Image 1 (cartoon, rainbow, N blue to C red):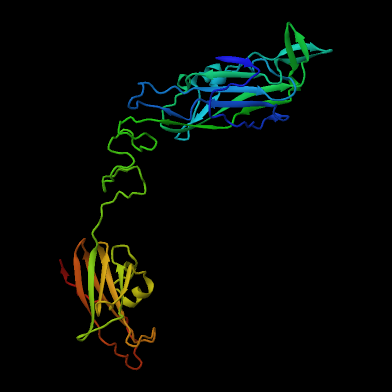
Image 2: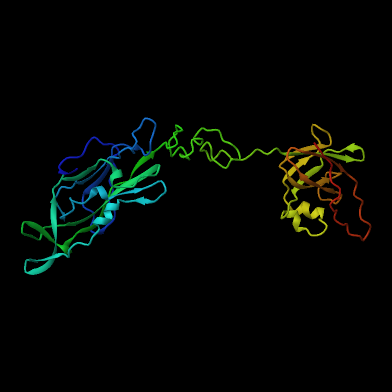
Length: 384
């Protein structure tokens, strides 16, 4: 329904604030473009107890001359297909326009040439818009013109092309004309964007999209129990990790010097898998180079509640253990002892126990450079 009135449409909610786009020539005319929706949320698909068709989306577009003077615009301005000039941006970020709009985009006749004063000029037929005049259209259902079939939020706004002129140059055959070159504005007027939400419960699980992240699967909805390892976001909460809990492996080490338990021995575990830091050391792996160059995954000290012992829980994997014994607790004075052994492949839920046997480092003979310790070939024994 289209009207040209001197009053505003009432009874709808969601009135958009007005903004006008930049355009050619002078400042935009004082014509406000309003986009109004009946509601902010609509049912898109079948809901329990709802009608079988998508809920109608009613909206209205109004153009109002809010200035104090009569405006002259191109003749067909108030006849513009306002119901086709809405652009919706869907949940996927893509624009949706009315397919029928393309049928109307045909090139019109060339401008008419009339005698104005003592010269022939190109003219544009114009209509007048008095202060307070409103051109409006009410659309009972946007589905009649637009393909709105995605669940989620849509943003809509109206863009109306307009040309305005300062005066009527000539009246001929009962039609007012303005000099085509005298246009003081030629551009587009825009409404501010309006947001609406389309919801659905296609799988009848009681939860509507977009909150329901998979509306085709009734087992997936917000609040559902997350099933680890099934590759699906069962509870529609990305922060709930879809991982199978892994039972860690356990390592129990005991530091001894002869038969005496030793506290304060630094123990570090290094990644011993292919491509790890320690794999760069070719041939016999040098303990001191690894100790100084590679980052350990787990650190600890023997002692505490259990004298001489250190217990670690680590993810399953392959590890190299290096322990440092410092008899005088003075760092980097040359009497530190590094003891290394491969822990092999630690399995989930398994316990690996072993002893760190400490031997005092003998000072090098005069004129002989001390060599780096090499990794011990023996493995620690594994137990359940």
